[in-house]
Amino acid sequence: MYLEHWELQKTPFGNVPARSAFYRSPQHEEALRRLLYVIEQRKGVAMLTGEVGCGKTTVIRALSDFLKKEEFQFETISNPALQPTDLIKAILLKLGGHANNGSKTDLLDQLHQHLFQNAENGINTVLAIDEAHVIGNQATLDELRMLLNVQSDDEFLITLILLGQPPLLKNISELQPLKERISIKFNLEPLDIQNTLNYIVHRLKWAGATRGIFSREAIQALYEFTEGLPLRINNLGERCLLLGLMRQARIVDSRIVHDAIEDMES
Image (tube, rainbow, N blue to C red; front, side, top):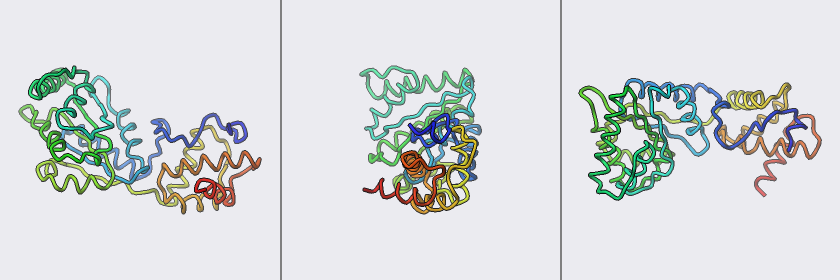
């Protein structure tokens, strides 16, 4: 709607995490490198936490691009609030198995066979559990831990990545056997003012911008409202571009940002 006005080729602030638009802030880069280490060294479990909109899912999507498809099977479970048996079924389906109506023992046997087959074929199995903080059943978390018992002589046959909001830390702390298996923990903090500026410039260039669109004062106002959370930045940035179009503005200034904030909160 506003692309022509701002001379853009695509929407810069979409809310669906885009691999190609991944902004490598220092902390997002560190999160990515830590997760790669856990996977490549087969360390068992990693945990990535952060507030809503901090970029956890974007990191995971970028991570999958680093892994060679012929060497890794990387899958994500997005709705893990399941009973233990249903979780096993969901994992089987993601890995390409058949979750029939067999017993839990049958399901686990099929899952173990798949993991061993992947290992024999030189494929490292990686499973990301998104929104892991919603798992309220300790038995379900313990079922995840039990997956780590599937091992060869010297390494795990599956790598688990637990993603979630800060309550995940408390949930894990109450399950000591799983807590002790976590080799890497990392918490994504919001962007600071400089990286908020860099993020906005990065997204605009990715969308085809050839000139500055947001004034420095506008970015300061945007940062103060969004507190450096990428999801909030995207939401407010989108509203600013739309409001700027309606006013036929040449640049997004701080007044447009403040008006966009009022518009969003009304």
